[in-house]
Image 1 (cartoon, helix red, strand yellow):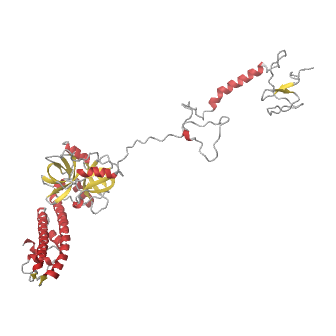
Image 2 (cartoon, rainbow, N blue to C red; image 1 turned 30 degrees about the horizontal axis):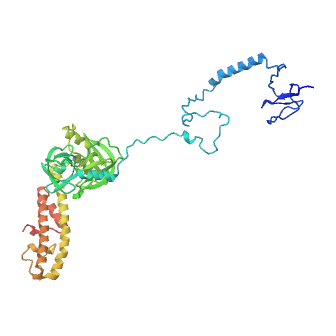
Image 3 (cartoon, rainbow, N blue to C red; image 1 turned 120 degrees about the vertical axis):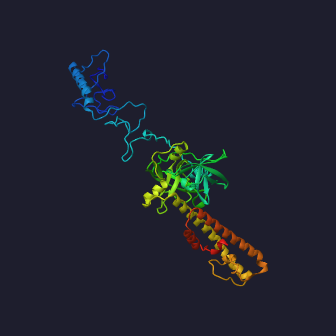
Length: 459
């Protein structure tokens, strides 16, 4: 009886290598085997002790296969020049943007669903580190800067300035004009004298010195105006129209070179009285000294770059500067010749006179009401003559023809005291305007507009 495990009665499954009887057409691994009469798939023979091995491939076949493998190995890389070589991966996961995808995925690689991103989350580029310095809150910047900003007062006129050291204040030349001594008014209302130490009319910059400096005085750091960029946020501080510690905000519109002077153009609101104040960057550093705002055009203001002030403090001046930025800009914007120093002083004096008379007129309006009440209840008789305001009759002895009731004499005395204060204020404003060479006709027009023009003011 023949052995059923012999090669005559069994064969090897090409898939699992298990030997099965020759009459079986399907192996237990599920592989279908050739039936009788069909060509049999290649069978790997297994040596059985005592039996001869099945003849393997011939030497010629082996040589042909080796030759074909060497040809493929030699020519394959040279025909794939369109595919870059994959760099060696430093770790098990690389960025999807750095590794080229292979033409054929290896067996068993899961494929992404349609419409989804094939890059796994772990392979995404890490976000760049944020190296920008966080900006302080705007309120903090302003609160730190305010104690360093002051009002510069000169003979009834005023402008702005700011401390850069405990004994040094910067302002504009057209604020101090030709004076050598000015008054500095701090944020808390205290005043100190200051000496005009140096002026540069070609830059419109004046340096003031404090004799007994306070070491604890707040100061402002100086940066650079020439390196400012269009669109950069800026803050203007000063005392416009006498309103101390006022803040406006805007952006840098442009950085312009006017001769040898660098100007920072901004749309921050600049009004009379802002001159000499600081123009701050968003971090609180000074980049310019406010010099002018064009009243006929909204959002058009200029500051002299702080770089010039730093050079002036060090004893250096820019070469070739002619005229002031203020006069040169006025000429460029209006087409008129630059104003002389006397004209500039006169214009500023007229503005100060207008402001002072406006404030007195508001007090006069309130006194009109008190005068009418006084006439109804305390005065018997009539007021002779015609006056813009009837209480002007207090300075005309012939006008008061009536009698004041004895019980109303204290009220009448108080009314007269207020009228005298208005009287004194008008005279003081007129004297300041006279020193500033404001024309008498201009003064008279201002008084008439506010109903304070009275020939008896000098009595």
